[in-house]
Amino acid sequence: MTATGTAFDVAVHAEATLGEGPTWDPATGRLLWLDILNSRVHTYDPATGRRTLRRTDQHVGAAKPRAGGGLVLNLRDGIGLLDPDDTFRWLHREPVPGRRGNDAAVAPDGSLWAGTMRYDEARGGGTLTRFTGDGTAETVLDDVTVSNGTGWSPDGTLMYYADTPTRRIDVFDVTADGRVAGRRPLAVIEDGAGFPDGLCVDADGCVWTALWDGGAVRRYTPAGDLDRVIPLPVPRVTACAFGGPDLTDLYVTTARVGLPDPHSLAGSLLVVPGAGRGVAQPAFAG
Image (cartoon, rainbow, N blue to C red):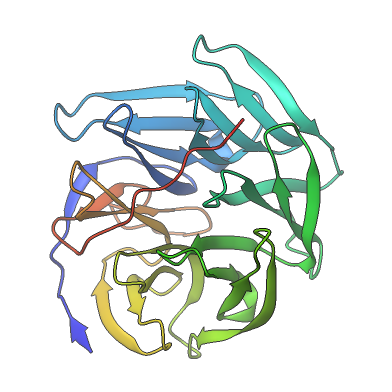
């Protein structure tokens, strides 16, 4: 295992309450990221430093590029679409009192796998649901507490997933029709090291996970071995994704929610230059 010290830079100094969801958009050369509890979708252009901010009408758990332009949003009451002209419409609206959208990811077939959780984090109160571009919804998991990181192996044959309170990163086999089966643990985060939050998969098939209350990002091999740790000065590390024109820079979101005396960088967007090599992520086919 290799520890890399604190070789990170501050991409955007911010005070996001719950920074989340970094996603590289190759069509615009910008990184998308969120402040869930402040209902904000941010963009950051590393080439120019330019930043934008869009407020949503509800808490937003994920924002991903669409194949035809615009964004798909995992909101409190369901899945929304932002068209390229900034027009909003619902793809699938299903409000459940006390529940909101959380992390989401786009599968190799262009479907959106969107998680939910209860605001009070009640056990089993969340779901993982697969959405296609026509709004069809298929529940994948219905006994989730805090649905978080989801990602696929480079060859598309495996899916990785974290229900945060379980302390596990699980792996599934992907079937011929794009569904999943054969759930089993890939790795278990030991007591005192934090909880697995958002994740991404690199070109070597290794899984990177952000550790909530763990102050680090870890990389696990496809065999489940821990082979790299990037310690960070903020305890609530929320998600990670590769970005930049060559997909070699690891962007990391952080949070300050619930911290009585947050670090000055809590809530900022961090970046680890040259951390590895990512895989281009598909856009939502809808």
